[in-house]
Structure formats: structure tokens, C-alpha cells
Image (cartoon, rainbow, N blue to C red):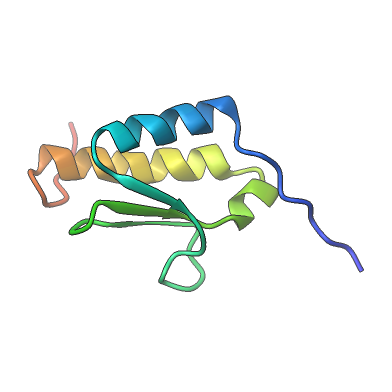
Length: 85
């Protein structure tokens, strides 16, 4: 049986996670409440979920960047997702 070993978050991942947390976002490294997703942002609670499988797939940083983009849209829209220029 082949088992993937979870890789550790990169320094860039941890830096972006910390930056989001300084803007009062909660970043959870656990499966999102919507099954089958790699990342998710819940706007009302400013909670970002990052599915641990993304570390094994080596897409953790792009996943967090994607959710950080939604976080920036949320900040720009003052609580609602708003397009960025």
C-alpha cells in the first residue's frame, strides 16, 4: 500500500498565512466543510480552510494564494466579495 507523507508548509506559505492572520482571517489546515474542495473562504467568519491533501499534492502555496485573493476581494468589498482591478 502506498501512503503519501504530508510535506511541511513552506516558508512562503507560513508567511502568507501569518499575513492573512494579521488582517483577522482565521486560517485552518483541515478539510473544508464542503467536501471535495482544496480551499475555502467563509466570508462572514473570515475563515479560510486549506485541505491538508494540498501539501501531498504540492499545491499548498497556490491554494493559499487563491484563497488570499478572495480575502483581498472581501476586504475591498467591505465584507462582500468584490472584483479586483
